Image (cartoon, rainbow, N blue to C red; front, top):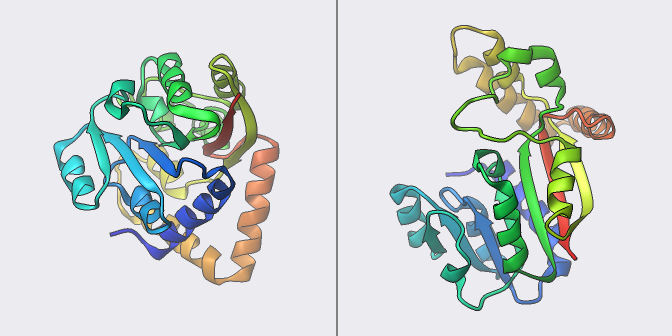
Length: 230
């Protein structure tokens, strides 16, 4: 079950995809339980995904997602091309990102859109926490990205940058990284701030301003980037 706030964020993202809708096909690489694609389906998209675990695949099939198991493979989608490919917090788990971006390029139609999110190695959290930054987690995370490295990777695979954001500061990640004992209490702090930023205009303004500054200086916890296939 996903929160109404997450559904709202998904819809806001899908709003930005609308002008690229042509084939009506959207692919989410590493789609997990399919929550994002479930929202996309409600908006009329033809939804496709990839995942590794049997449990996630079973859940996706129940939601009507055209799901493929394992790594992204062009032959799994036959002659399909996609308007949109999304990859949420996946690319850091892949040991050959050049190959992955090349697959994205092949699967996208001309002028199709690629949307990627991944942890930001140049984040304020990483600079402050150094070796305690808990995003550095081998073998779960194999590659780490900054704006410069991710844009270069995309350009080498015939993508151009449309929009680039580095947003967010996780109090739970910060406090857990600093603590020897991991607790669930700090997770609630992130949730409280998230809810207040939706319902309280003061918090909403502070959040907007904070993300604006974090993006300018490229110091937010998360990279969010739109690329266009050339």
